[in-house]
Amino acid sequence: MNRYNGPSSVDFGVPASGTGVTHFIKATSDVGFRTMLSNPAIAEALINELFKSIHLAPIRITDEGRLEMPLQEHGSFTGVDHHAITTKREHIIIEMQMIRHDNFDKRVLFHAASTFAHQKFEDGEWALQIKDVYTIQFVDYFTQGSGPIKYYEAINRLSLKAGQDGQLLPYETLPGIRLIQVELNGEGIRDIKFPVQRELTELEWWWYIIKYSNQFDPDEVERCKKLGLSERMEQALRQLEYVGLDPKKREAYAKEITEIDTYDDELRRMKLRGLLAGFIDFQKISSTIVQEIQNWGKLFPRSLVEGIGNRYIGEGKISKEQLGHFVKLLAENGVLSD
Image (cartoon, rainbow, N blue to C red; front, top):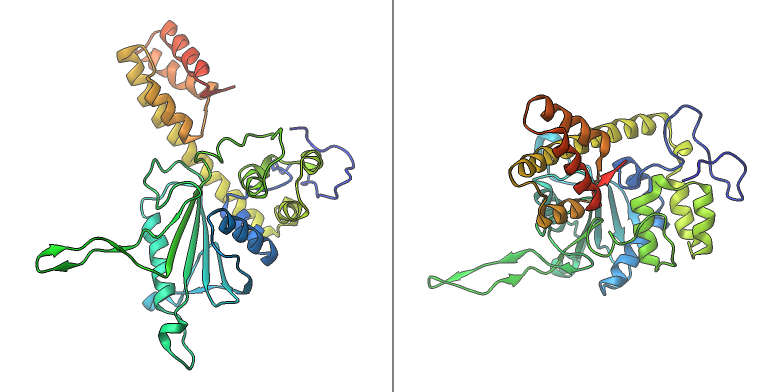
């Protein structure tokens, strides 16, 4: 992308010189996602576009705030990226997860079940006052089928298995709690590349902004407006302007990005060591491994490959010619970046 170096017809702020950051922060970061959804109109638009795609009724947000949870002596509040209450008193919980977390599904279930069970009742029939809880999770990694749902699919994963006279009954879905997960590296979303060269649907524009916000500059905004970028999407980007962050948010964002980069770098190193070990044994990279890396959605920088490879050469595990062949195979399979 071209860096902004002059006036633009779009009045977006420019990061201060020397900050080393882009015009817009990552929408997939905790700071970015929470900042973007802090505008109720944007949160409502995103929810309704997602709901429309999976045939759920549209909602109107009437209230937002911290989510109350029974955390015993630790206090009654827990942190989620976004919590809203609709005009029908339904709860909507939205979370963004950039790094794979072994207990993420359990945390999602805890938030949903606790919210469902601890609804506040007023006068009247209590059963009529129990409202649905929707929990939407955006995950910026490939779940390899381990996530609650598949791309664009909303299912109720909570189920009950009852025993009667020693026999198991069929699973019955538990109504009232809806778990919705969107894989940002899943099929369909992954196919929307940057910079986009075609008109997108409204939902696809959301995916484009959420995935690539930090690669935008004012020129890209103008280009996308010609392709159909709506005012609402432009408004979402404005929420993500780096210059609009207060000092505390800038500090939190910098820390978060450093942690993510460190995590990603270690993942790449682990995968490269495994690839090199297999390559030394078989002198090839299997199509299964290539597919796994492509699904992972992250490339291997040439400098990192050569750095680890040269260390292996020094240890006598691989020759210079073998390393060259290995680098060539990565490039041919589209998983090497310069």
